[in-house]
Image (cartoon, rainbow, N blue to C red; front, side):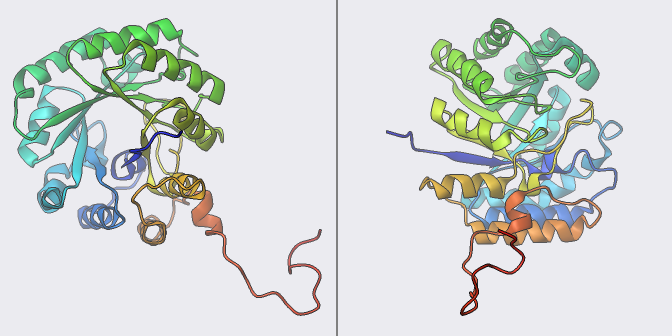
Length: 318
């Protein structure tokens, strides 16, 4: 029997926008987040509270949150990525209801990304938890980057991944997302790592953050589902990429993921037509950035009129 309780976390307003060279206007970001909420998505990563000199795209996070925080009243969980205590303080002050702390299990990538070793990031996480662990209405998630491959160190041993999961869980974190930051993951590897994590840490809710850089995003998502994972990050239109990981590109597209699960009779709570309309809106505000979602480009399966006496569909050669 397949597990139930699937949760899709929309990370497009953060991961989808962070790697763009041009600044997306504040009002467009606000409109995008509201439209995503209207699709039935219950958890949205609205952006990141990071140094604006490092990622200028999120220099307006306080203004964005001031306009969308009311979505919390309708049960929407609004999260933001935070790398340190100052980011957490800014996020909590802005009305964020869930903090997504992140660091990489690869020492090289973590140094390149946040200028810290993984151990230093864990120390920063302790500071965040020490200040906010008892804050009412606030929850925490930790995203472990480069779990399925690092552009500087290659594939990591499962033992090294489990070591950082253990160190994170020991701090009381009960939601951990394993990230394929550069899209190196493949199904048998995804299965092996997830099985190891689920077996060793049954008290933790694991999720996956998959990229489709090399075309295996949906295959990896399917394998994660079969392994027992219920939490999936995805980005509208398949946009995304890490500015500090060479070769990183697009996330699994939310509309492709919803279509995959719907095709199998698995309910996501997300309206696909509204989601595709929202993808069209996003393409409109990013005219120079083609969306990579297969469903957005091809559309959902629909019957078309067939000419009487014709043996082939126009445009097909066989």
